[in-house]
Length: 60
Image 1 (cartoon, helix red, strand yellow):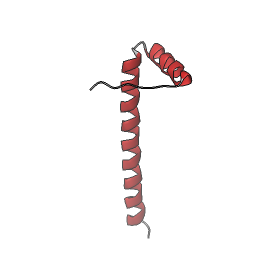
Image 2: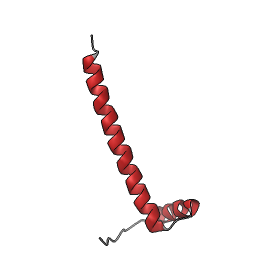
Image 3: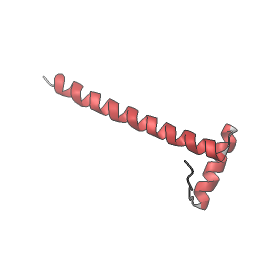
Image 4: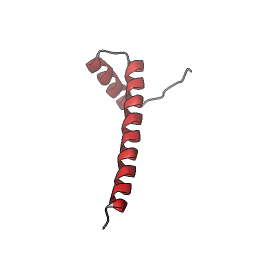
């Protein structure tokens, strides 16, 4: 699916720096950043859920 991404000048520079540092295109850097952020969020949510259950289980 095609998508237009509107960035501020600062975000454009940050994306260019990120892509350059990784030796990849800005499009690939964007995709990787999205996937990394999603994976982190899913992991953090799962850890929080497990922590909640463990604290309830071992509250005694």
